[in-house]
Length: 78
Image (cartoon, rainbow, N blue to C red):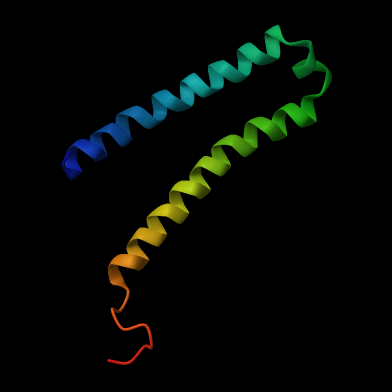
C-alpha cells in the first residue's frame, strides 16, 4: 500500500469511524440503563478508548522512527 492510498484511507475512513463510534455511544446510552445511571463512568470509559488507541499508535510510530534513526553504535561514539 503506497503513501497516497494510506492517506486517502486516513482522510476518508477516520471520519466514518468517528461517526460509527458516536453511533455506538448513543445506542449504548439509549439502550442501557447503566449508561444513563452512571454518566461519569460511561463518559470516562468512552473517552479512554480512543485516547488509548491514539497513544498506542503514537508511541508505536515514535518507536519505529527512533529505531530507524538510531545509531548502530550503542556507546554513542561516531
